Length: 52
Image (cartoon, rainbow, N blue to C red; front, side, top):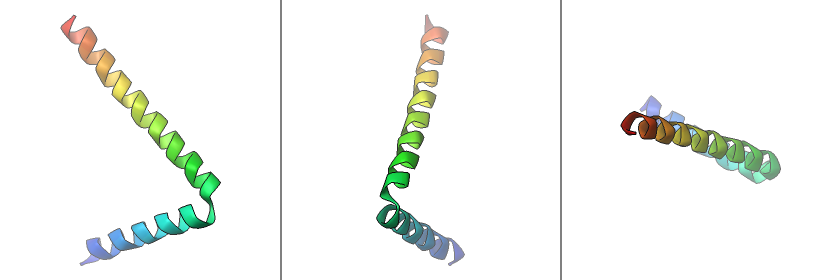
């Protein structure tokens, strides 16, 4: 029950954040995307070096 409420509150906050502060939201998501891409590149490099 608590998990469900927290999930809905998180979704509501996300919608609120995007609706009322779109430039900051875009910046946050751009940063998150860059971080995820860097992590994926690191894993790719690791496995390439491991196999080669």
